[in-house]
Length: 82
Image (cartoon, rainbow, N blue to C red):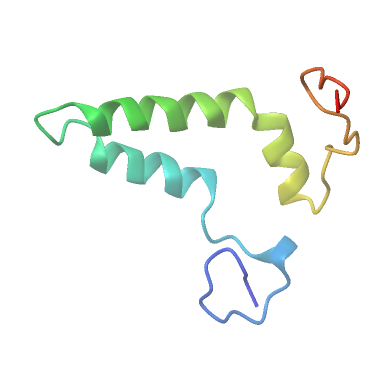
């Protein structure tokens, strides 16, 4: 089953092609330029930026791997002061 789409495909998640970057890019083009407040345009820019910035991680996940093996916090966390 494809958990990302929930459409009941019998394919394993690594073989599922639903929600590919090409689909996301196409959908972004359908949203861009809509809405008087330009909020959708900002969202499209954010999504496109994330697709570019995290391309290597997306490739790894598409191949069934995750590079996030270090679970230490990104920002320093102060010790409990109680």
